[in-house]
Image 1: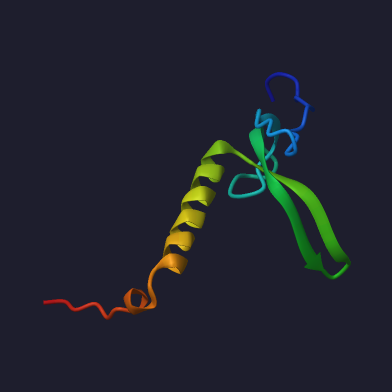
Image 2: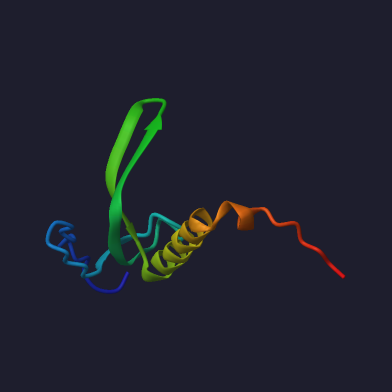
Length: 90
């Protein structure tokens, strides 16, 4: 690891989106400390109850997550008559 870890966390109420050093919760190796940004709270149910924590992700994973969310949004907003069109190949 190169340099000190920045412990100043993003304050979602103030809109401060400065990266902090931490672990990416999405697609990266969870042992790697890197610049990450707050992406929101995570709550998940498991055998010992509900676990809740602030989640962080690296810029690359945030871009991928954003693209996936936008694609899903576009699919949901598509008119029903266009959603299940059979593909005709010549």
